[in-house]
Length: 453
Image (cartoon, rainbow, N blue to C red):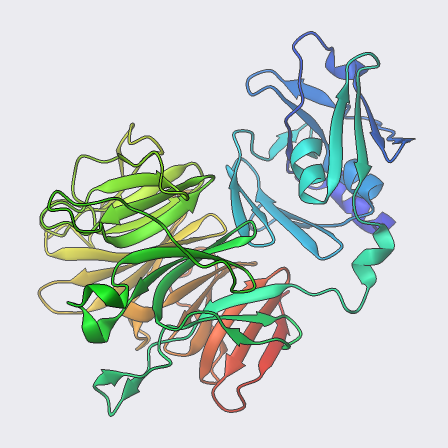
């Protein structure tokens, strides 16, 4: 890591990553850290235990240099990014979500600021970067061993895998084509492009080595054998396809879903039972299936350590949230978009701490796309740019919030409801990974890379 970056980080507003090793009996100033046997020297801010969560925090700049990682700080969004050997970790200050190679991890000890320094958890960041973390109580030492070598971060053949769903296409303007909503994988160098799903996929979420996805067939809505409303998972290479067993309805038929999200070891889903549409959760192996919500819902997403959902248009007034066990229900957004009682919230997605969702005016049929940050309570919305907002995709945040709509990539800057067009080349796919925007255009069907500033 460059010394100039270290200096900037030491004097910038800083973020904290949590270490899951802590002992109330240990004085914070006495804790030692070693990385592959080499002691880490801390100057002004020492490693300390946050007794409220039982986590050990260390200064980001110092531990990043000890790891041999590249570290960057985005002051606009209060986001820190650490990169080592193609591993990318992104975390925001005071936010429970940490992104590891694009997959969400929910932590009970988010990034913090202490004495004007970014402090992070050696356990969370160390393990994410491949280090083995061990607590040695006899010497009050946290020993990190293994991890990627610093020079490996520069190897030209290191690459990440990108996953995307193709947009909706029509044949003669009426029938969806056989290439609509298919799940694909491609390397970030454009190689190895592979179609992973044979049927339509409306939603996907990468968790660890697995891709979870929601399958449906618009052409055969009434035929049970066409995977309507089934949730699946597969390995990232397309192998080991498994249907998640959602149990049975009261009539004995297989339970179907209308939406889902994954948190830790749980699959949360909205059942497709007539006049029910409750939120349930089930283990990936089909065990421990239980109901979470008591009221009807129609769209669902995970952000931080809470579930966000929308009731049907006739049964609610906005966007709601609750704890993972269904407790502490709150109304997050009530505003002019839904005050008439004829507004319908659809298709909630979550990326980088933001929620994106479509609000439909049931009277006029007009759509508005809205962005909401549950931590800062910031909102942005648009309906005036002629986008097909009902099929818009939230891409994530990088000095602004990016959106793919009507085959254009646009970015919302903080406090601005007028998004700026970034790419208008008939995009059929767009994914943000690390500091780059990857996209494919219909013109040449090849992967392009746009570095994000």
